[in-house]
Each structure stands twice: as C-alpha cells, then as structure tokens.
Length: 287
Image (tube, rainbow, N blue to C red; front, side, top):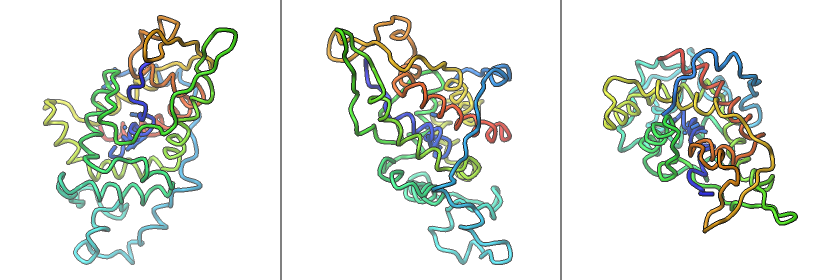
C-alpha cells in the first residue's frame, strides 16, 4: 500500500497541531464533510488528560495581571508567544514570511515534549498547515505539505502460513506523534491558533475560499477523522508491485485519509479521535 501522508498523526496535531499551526498543529488531524451533532452522540470517546507530564500551565509561564509587562517593553520573542493575559484583538502576529521561528517557539512553550522540535518542519509551517488541512477535509492526504516529518521507522509486515499482515510493529511508528499531541493542552493550542489566525486566513483566501472561514474547514477535517471506524488489529496485505496493498478491496478503495488512519492501528485511531474531539469542542465556539 502506498505510504502517502505518513506524518499526518501530527499535522493534524498538525491538526491538529495542525489546529495550532494548526494539530496543530497535530497533531494538521489533521477538507471534510460536516457530520453534525448525530455523529458525536454516537461517538463513544473519553477525553484524554492533556499535558500533565509535558505542558506547563499558562499561570506557570506567564505573569499575572499585576506583574504583566506592557507589549512595548517585552522582547520580540515574548511578543509573539502564546499569552492568555493578552486579548486576541490586541495580539499582532508577525508577518507570514517571518512567522516560522515564532510559531516553533510558541509550540515549544506549550509542549515540553523533547521530540516536538525534531519532528516539526522548519519552513512555511502556517502555509503547509492550511494546505494540508484543506486537502484533509476532502479525505486527501498531501504528505509534502505536512508540518511534521514522516515516521523514521519503516512500514513493517508480519508473515505466517503464507499470509502477510500489517501488525503491531508497524502501528508503533505513530506512537510518538500521539505522545506529542497528548502533551499539549487543547486550550493552549486553540489560543495559539486564534492568535495567529489572521495569517492562517490570509493563506486560506489565497487558495480561493472567499466565502468560508478556515476554522469551518478545520472542523470539517476533524469530523472526517472522527467518522472513521477502526478496523481489526491484524489486516491482511499483499505486494503485487512495489507498494503493499490491502487484500480487502473495500479497504484498498478507501480514501487516502482512511487508509492512513488504518496504518496507525485501531488503538492509535481512538487516541487521535479523542484528542481531536477535545479540539473540536473549543473550535466550534469561534465559528
């Protein structure tokens, strides 16, 4: 099967950081159909605990109102940081061309996960995030626009009695992405997303969407992920040419997004859906 979009689990941290650079991230979680309220009544997911081990709380990182410095007196680095003491309408982001180092720094401030900066791409984070999520909302995975690097471990299969299976060893490739997403408090990530939203919306307008907000598209992308049902832990594959393919034609004919999620394994799919559901609950407030 083709290995398109193998780094999605974070850009849709990338969602979803994909949400942040949005999945951010994503998370990137991350062009989707609105599933509506019925989807979430049927979705039995428990919201995870975010950032307990890695992410600092806003009160630990930023001064109280009494000790808050004025924007004119703080450093350029802190000027563009995620600061809950600054009203959204008072936050002026850097230019899109200059945004990459500030977005990377802001992400490192809200997640102390040691692998985040290693896996995050260096250039055009916001542009890649917008394009990646836009494609994702249509069920497409554009690996070249992922804000995260692909997994270092290669796709692995297991063989028994003449049959070939995609098993647990291959699923483990995505564990690090889920760990990073879990280290970020959704509230902090959505705050980062909102502060840099003018840049996000500018990129989205350039793609040709004058009558639709990017937040709507992001929610549609999240809904796409939430609608995917996990399959069994062991899935039979074969290799008719260079790439492995699913033996089951229904799986092989699935969307690129669905096939990517299947390659993450059922356990990681449920973890990702729980994370993205938490992001969604924050994002719908701002549509």
